[in-house]
Length: 524
Image 1 (cartoon, helix red, strand yellow):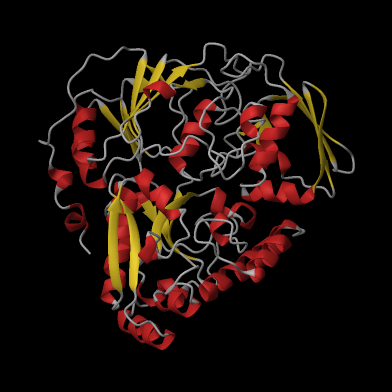
Image 2 (image 1 turned 90 degrees about the vertical axis):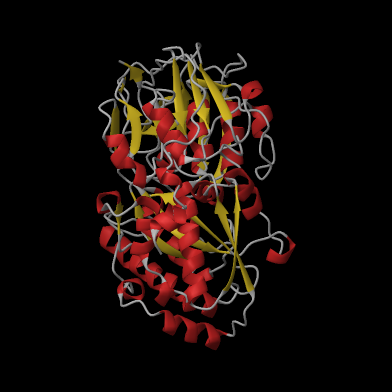
């Protein structure tokens, strides 16, 4: 599969129509995100675009520092009883929501309760919870049935469903129903009246936000805002985005196309930098509810045909500094990454063996619907390679291209593929979130995440990991889980992506270490 054929030459179309030239205030930051904002609720949705939106609008009780350890954020104090069962969190006094109301303990309790029904680690809290109560407007007490040292980390992590603190009236919304207002207490206000889905998103500086009186530290510490307005401009055509960046019509592009990087590097006004060093694990996710991938033998059959290097080169180009293979079930380079059974993906590729395995599994030319986002080039490239791979082993593939927002809605449907459902989509997960079983959503066997996989064995191993006495014990569990992945195949890891971002050199202060963050950055 040649990358350039996937992109159909659009990467070279720098002469394509550009954005209309317009003078932009020096107080406005113009940003091109990786995809369209389809849902504004970071609890009900797991997309990285919605998560990035949530980190602007909402604050969290704790925030992770550059060392990925939790530190108080909305919390002024955090005390844990000697037996580890009682957590007391005192709120900072100056916290206010964007609608002017003060942040109260009951808002936090309702927000935590809603989050705990959707997030993986939140569900852990839900299982261990004895009681949450508010003895005062500024104090939360969380009483557990048994100790959990990871509670603060779970409340402050930035991946998937963030524990976004919102007003109680919104936090009472059913966890599976997205809220329709984005009201938080974070450093930016969402300008809902200016939101044009699929095209334009606007945030303005929250003038009532009081940063912590300490240096910024990734998601912790002070979060100073130096722009009055941040505009997200959705540009599905990479050539148009590249031209806009060169012409100073935008300031920052989250996911520049690999084929365009040489052109962008040729400009002395543009910097190319890997901001998220933890990377993101690419994966192919199956729908476990419907044929043919309700059959684990069919899922296993495609493994001999998967060539991780082809997926990574299609998504990010041939520069191996931007990706890493091989990749197993856990993020490469992290303590629990291992080689257990990895030869299923690192051994010689054998499409003919995959064909024979498909026939033996009973596959009989049933159509396979693969969803692909036309406005998300990286994921679109992964989907195109997946389609090509399955066609080469004799599967009847229907690659359906749509915008990212539509794909997010479509993948949540449990209907059969012939009734508007699906069989496969490709996605990525933040590297630090899929580095351990506790927060590794695709590994779950409780049918909770999109794809609805079930596995009592994986669930039991996850519980065992929570109880692991030390790192060697945790590693043994991770190896067993990875072997089980090759047997049950809830997903197929495709490689670790470390895509760079591109921005005008007039910007400084970008927060590195994770997703694009909009505090600290300034012009000049």
